[in-house]
Length: 278
Length: 286
Image (tube, rainbow over the protein chains, first blue to last red):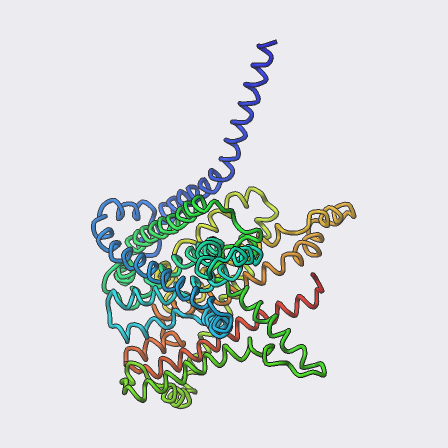
């Protein structure tokens, strides 16, 4: 009897484990396998067709650049990363503060918010040369371009979040004689957190784009400069290596924002609002 | 809008809000009573705010004697705009055409790939996570690669721009196709409808809101992609003209070109929004 029970328990546990393995295989293994397969197919294509390495370098050539000369890539990755992080931090701070200011009064909100939304539709990247005219060639203008582009999604998301706090909770605060500031700090702001983080995820992507395009145009230092320089010199393997490093930086930063969001969710003990976020 | 991370930063939601507010404001005009000031407020206030900013800008430039190279007053920008209007319109043509081509290409390819992903679970598991990953990485860094592959003509710009705006279309189309009502699909199957018929008559119409919101994002990104492509390598187009003007420190011309670019961006975005409105009324749903 005990043996039969043990067998049933073991087989259920094994079934559970194999279920998890299959689930893991489907969700992570398949896409990762597809990516690996694509890289292998790319390598075979380059070897078989002897395609010119200036046109399409093989993954092995890109790996040679990454492993053989990492110093220059790391050297140039540093200014780019610093610019991205600084512009993202400034954009987030200004965005949240401005959104808070906008939402403090209905009249101000109705006056400014539609203009900011209109700004979202225009191609803000076209203003990059203007910033270079104003601030010269260098880190300052690149950071400003990044801030300008990342700032609007932050404001829009934060404003949406601050406006969407549940009215019953706010009324409860008022009935308990909480001041405007208290109800903002303890209710509006925590409720807006998911929206703020959604805006931050968009913001970090936009900051990257702004910094990279700034470096394309001014070409003084950084990974964007390496990309332009190497592509004009025909060293496409270096271009791809720099792109790989940039993608790595982008994924790490995005992951950090996501991790920050998880931490804040744990801290405030909340779940996402019912309708999801933007 | 549930759970969708998009690059538009709330544009879709906000534009819808503004459109519905404008609708509630304009509706009474058809009736007997004129709209009250309170109802007109959502439309007057933003325009008034923008006008105030322009006025302050003009006064600051005139009173503080800011050099026009740094910040030209709106009057000078307007004058410059009228002076170089033919040139701007001439340069606007390649930009607009490239954007439209890239957008059409991205939508066609995106919807086809979304159809393939919907009907093949294997393809969905393999491709969809990679597609979402591609949304996060800075695709703009690949722009010089397109120049290496396709030269400095407009093909490389169109290809890069299509590459950039392809991903929002696929992702929203996949989400849209997956959101079709399962009971309706089962009804189709029980009435012996083929897969293609049930796709055309049920899945596709149900997915249209999601597809249109993806298309709005894609339209904005198509223009941005073309401009970035023109920054890197171009002999024509508004992005090229802005770079050329900035190298001559002709700030008023930069602003004038930017204004034309904004108009193009807003018009193209508005065209997609209008198309969505028309389709929504025509299909008469929800």
